[in-house]
Image (cartoon, rainbow, N blue to C red; front, side, top):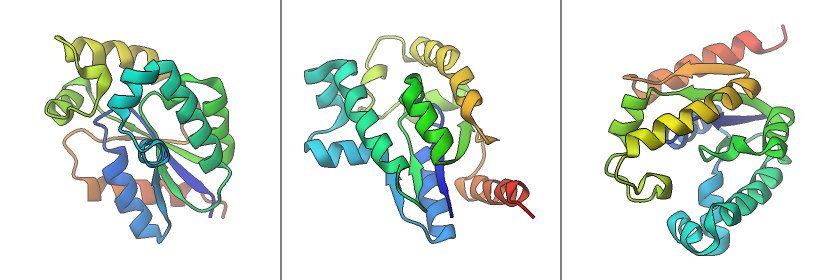
Length: 172
């Protein structure tokens, strides 16, 4: 089994759906943000505060490159992982990429009370989400093998849809 990588904006359900998908497929689950936190002993907002976004992106790249080299895992990436060309290439060549798409409204609803999202600690998080989506959506689509809409859908239903789509992609 090759790797399965979940990409998409914050609040699209990558971690929740990734855990369920991994359980269903009996594969290990990794969240690149959690791997970074475990390695540094610090949470993402602290890394952003101390090292800035660029420092975080360097750590993220190292974690993604390492995880992409493994075989047979499900990985949820951070929303901005696709910003780097080398991350996109590693994901594309390391397994199947599943883009979990969520509308701006859904992202706002799912992230509004989450203080662990440094980019949203602003007076207008909706504007930030719109700008991020405008920049990142084409990048998610560029590397996606499968695109799944997650708005108003329970995670288990999304997992079943992913499994169906994966079967359709499998060589016969």
